[in-house]
Amino acid sequence: MTGNYGDYALMWYDDPYEECYEWFWSSLNIDDTLPKSFLEHLYQMVDDVESGKVKTYPFTQDMLDELNDLVGDMIDNVDLNEKLDE
Image (cartoon, rainbow, N blue to C red; front, top):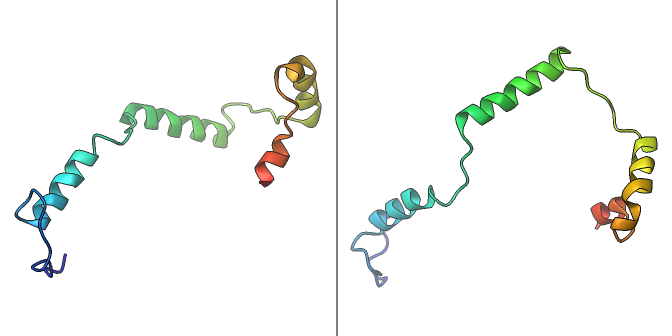
């Protein structure tokens, strides 16, 4: 802050710095903060995939077609590629 707030009517704080400070600390409770153990687990999973410890399988068009045959009538025949382009 530059300190050029003398001409402004202050709300419920006497000091704009104090208002900013309070909003910062109270807004930390608003965000979803993931636990450290969860993030470490995700990093471990990425390392396992990149090192080849865990085998991965690509999702092919044949698999997508089979999935669509199984649950196609449950969705409104929405073309996901078309939705992504919008």
